[in-house]
Each structure stands twice: as structure tokens, then as C-alpha cells.
Amino acid sequence: MNFLKYIFYKNKILKTWDTADDEALKQWVIKKDITKELDKDNDLLIKARTAIIALINKENPKESDLKAYIDLRKKFKDIFKENNNELVNPSSEDVQNMDLMSLNEIDEIIEDRKGILSRRYFESISEIYSSSYRGLIVRPTSGGLYKSKTPTNDFIDNQPQEFNPFDDMGVD
Image: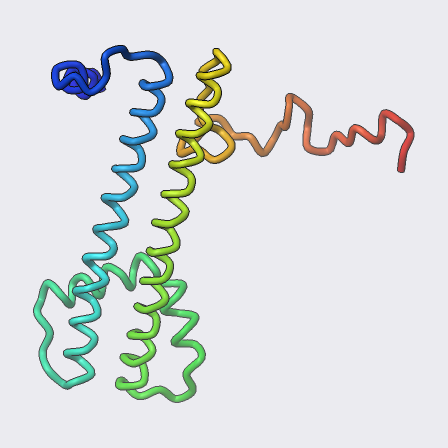
């Protein structure tokens, strides 16, 4: 992180550096890491499609394309399983066509994840700088890419989940 700050200073991108910029940079790094993973899945998807199309055309697919197809089948096994369960007495061609449809669904999932990531990144940056403007730096929590390391489902505002504030007021 300090290396990135050095680059910003050296190239005079920022004249000053404050805590908000530090938090924004952390969010950018997280976004880049997640984007890298989504791009890897996208590359696997392209190779897997090539393998499936080769199998449908009764050709031998490249080994790397076939490996990408197998890796995607492992990663998104629920989608493939659900789609293949819809087939009754399937032939190998039916399974391959259904797998091609599954790959299309995976493509939609990846695109949706990219859109969600972009929106969450924008919201986190907005939250960081709007809080900075008010004089208080917060880590983005509502829409940010920051993930808490402590479980939050056991307590909300230091109250057990069974706690109902209306119980204290005598309201049913």
C-alpha cells in the first residue's frame, strides 16, 4: 500500500494524502483483486465454450479448453447439476447442449457480479468521501467492499437477535 502512495506522490497525482484517500485506495485494491478473479472465470468460460462446441461437433477439444470446462463444472456444479437433472434419458449430445446452456447462465452470473461489484465500489467511495466531507472517516459498511472479520449475525447493535425493542414497550 505504501508503494502505491509513493507512486501517487512521485507522479503528483495527489498533493496531499489523507485517511479518506487511504480508505479509497484500499477499496480500489479490493475491487481490482475481485475483478481479477472474475476475469479468470470469464477466460475459463471462453475456453469451456470452445471445448463444448468441439464436443458437439464431434471433434477433439484442446486439452487446455477441456481442463477449463472441467474446472468450471467443479466451481459451478450446482448449475450444471440442476440443468442436467431436467433431462430425461439424456444422450451425450443432450448433456453437451445443456452444458452449453449452463455456460450461458454462468456468463450471466459473471456479468451480474461485475455490475454488483462496480455499484458497491461506487457506493463505498461515495460513503468514504461524504463522511470525509463531514469531518469523519468511516470504512464503507453499507455498500462497500469492506468485509467485517467478526460475525454480525449473532448481535445487532450489541443486542441478541431474539431481542425485540417492542417487547420493552408492551406492544405486541
